[in-house]
Length: 290
Image (cartoon, rainbow, N blue to C red; front, side, top):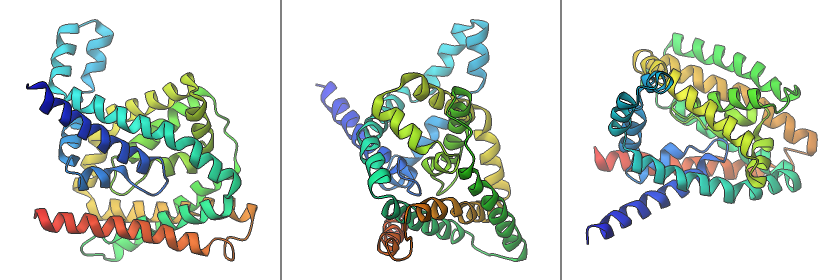
């Protein structure tokens, strides 16, 4: 009889993973918001935080006793079921988004642009007392983001090392508030390729991306959390600037395909509205649980 409640719990986690994956694959929409709204955010953060980078050393040295002890500290069934849901959503959504990017380029990039601008504003509004230093970090971030957005004109290729580094940057970005790993993948000019890889189930490319993400989480999670806790306002301002500046790439790509103003303004407003709705629900949830 005890297996029924456990099955129901796993089914609920899987469905939450589906919702998170459907959001995570869209640039500018954070699956972390879905985790917060559906009540699993703290459990997710705790599970990721319990991953010990020292486990890699134990594995390399063949110290399987210590490795087993490390694994037992992790909420492994929860993570496996959640990731299964996220992965399923990625596989289902990849073909749809790839078709939209190919057949409705202006509309899709206008929608993405609305998502990113609204997400950047939402991040900045998390700063309680903006000051001159905050504005300076915002300007620095915008300048760096503008230069980063120009990488869309470069072609680094899609080799396994490039995909590894992209995964590392993208999954680390997902630790940060309001940042979408899909957007980082898009800025680094790997988004459409990874969508095609998912649709065709190109295993080496997918595994390289995932391996980079896992490495990034193991190496940089604690440092990023420290920076956010110690320099909260500065980090949020920097992130806001990075998102606003790098949005140049979305505009340039969409404009190369057609009229972003005349043909895309409705979709831009739709992107603003989607993030606005998510933020409204998130703030209501926070208020209700305070």
